[in-house]
Amino acid sequence: MLSSNSDSNQFVEHVVLFKVKPDADPSAVNAMISNLNGLISLDPVFHLKAGPIASTRSSSLSFTHMLHSRHRSKPDLGSYSDHPTHISVVTNYVRPIIDDVMAVDWVSDDITGSLTVPPGSAMRVTFMKLKEGVEESGKNEILKVVKGIKQKFPSIEQLSVGENFSPGRAKGFSIGSIAVFKGVNELEALDSESELANEQKDKVREYLDGVLVLDYVVPSV
Image (tube, rainbow, N blue to C red; front, side, top):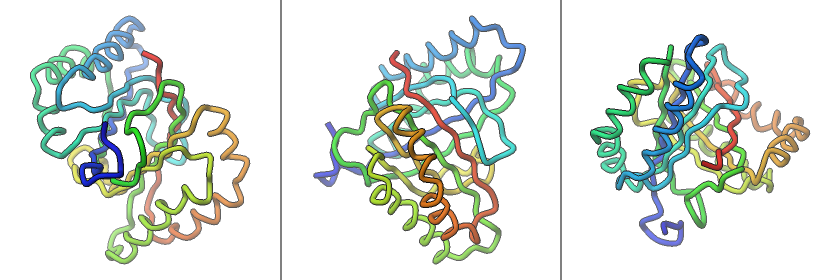
């Protein structure tokens, strides 16, 4: 199992957001989720879970479901994307029932221990869009602040952050992060520390043109 104690700890985060059509048949939605979760069987996939989004905030964008997967390398992510089974699931079960899709990918090496996310874990996923003309120093400041959040909020079990390398479907968002908590209670407790959280946001607000924040509970199946 990959861990951050070796040179092979670097991995790729892949997050896809789906907006299911309001009139989609519930059985078709369940089939989409089931078939997406079945992609965990593909060799290029290290971890994969798909399910409904618990809540979305801080953006006019509205998504209903999320797929989160982890891959050992960019070539593995490419092999997963091009795999006939993945293409078949997207063609037959996803595209017919969605109105919109967004995907963000980044390389991360910040996680210690197992790279899997246990069922029942709660995740706060954040995507940031930079203002036009923000220089490299501003982008590096954002990455530094986000990476430092784990020390300020000990309830975060895993924290992954990085710069998106697949702009085609990212809707202009260029930095992604995932904070993993033991469960919903721990995630909700974070919101009670709003003053400390706002301090961190204030450090990077001047560089940002938009933020999308969503909460997601890792399904058991």
